[in-house]
Amino acid sequence: MRKFFYSFTFSAILLAITSLIFCQKGNDFSYYKKLNDEEKRLEEYKDSDNDLIIKLKQLEVINASREKFGAPPVELHILASRVANMISREAAEKDYVSHWNMKGEKPYHRYAFAGGYDHVTENAYGEWSSRDFDVTPELIASLMRNGHQSFMSEKAPNDGHKKNILNKAHTHVGIGFYIMGKQFRYYEEFINRYLYFINIPSALSVNEKGVITLDTKGECFLYFLICYREPFPQPVRPGQKPRKGSYEDYSAEVVMRVPAWELSVFRKGTIYRIPVSFRKEGLYYIHIFTSKKDITFPRAISTKGFEPVSGIVIKVRK
Image (tube, rainbow, N blue to C red; front, side, top):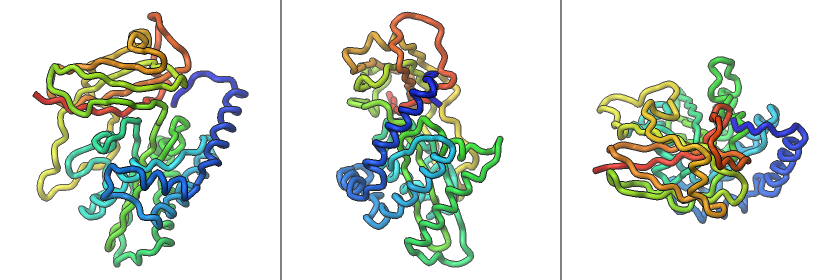
């Protein structure tokens, strides 16, 4: 969770402003339909108007949970919803519930490979029936509420899905579902959107120079960058299903740590152009943290209590 030690008064004002902005968009079907029609990525997983209406009702359910615990509302994220639809469909067709897909990809892989750059965290849920589901909007809405309620019913210390829902750093959520035969799957993809990404290389060759270009719009400053390396995902073996359990949002191999004062060198106005280059093949997963403070000289800093606001994944091959 991003903590910048605001006063209670300032936090209350910020929450009020956030709520006002959300109310202007809220569950406005025309607003989200326009976004849905304009989004060209993963078009095969695009929501119909009817499905979009169902999801906007579910957005109300999610935001009611967040409001109950003092978290600001989130908006529906169209691309993340398509990513959620994609994993929901595969999970239903292959009869599994997992944060990994059949290609061995984690949530942040799938979102990044679809063209997303913000940070994403996932909740996954499934239901099975002894007979084929009677597919109606009312049933789908009911099953989605069941899924969300199962997350909210979790008790510490096994309450990771609930904590994800209530994380105050989230700004958007992708909602996905798929129903077929006796199978129903429901996924929530929570997004932290604080940066405006301009040019991000999706693939580089070993030792090739690339540049990550992003804009803060003057709303924050880059605080820290951490880059992790991991091997390319391995597909599930024939006859097997993806692994179960929680997933790590990083790997053990850290290849880059860049603090605020070094990042400030790459800033001109509100735009950062950060050079990158990698010596080995693999996937490079980049977490960026932000702050309201502009730190241009070395000092003791820590990312403890901060939430990553990027989920950049770069494929590097020879």
